[in-house]
Image (tube, rainbow, N blue to C red; front, side, top):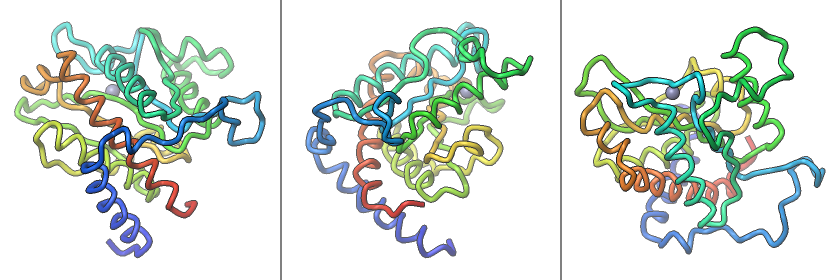
Length: 246
Ligand SMILES: [Zn+2]
């Protein structure tokens, strides 16, 4: 790693991970806003959020699947649990899909016949309004080889904060799943390429692997995944306040 800035960021991140794992989650909670937060643009009429949760796919777009199990349902189930966990930690967050529908259906403003582009436009548009400190997009993986397993966090290659967020999340998910995987640069993903806010795609596990599939579809295990994500996000937000603007 040649970039000295990035190296010192990561040094701080490692310290924070150690700190986050030794401190109870209540102690990591950010102070509760007494009133609704003003938007980062300064306009009180515009909403804002520290964290934007993106529940991948929805409606006609089921994402990946195995038999009758659809990725979009798992993404939404974990996203709803994660929102609850973040709220319990007094973290201001917005979830962009709260039911089984396609975000492209909500997008009536974009002049394109492509449902996929309208879907991406809607997800992207929300981040420019909210200006969050972090965007976490939840997904589920699939591989031809059934032995491939475990969570993988994808980050924006040119955004040091995205890499730190990915490392903190990956570490927490590894602890929860008993894996030792590393985050991965997600070069080809539209959201990672276009969003300025630190953004990661969390592939929570492989539907094609029997043990991952069992974890991803069990409500108690989904709660554990949501807890691992929430404690990592909480740790990242503490750290993010100490980082220079990139
Ligand atoms: Zn997906």
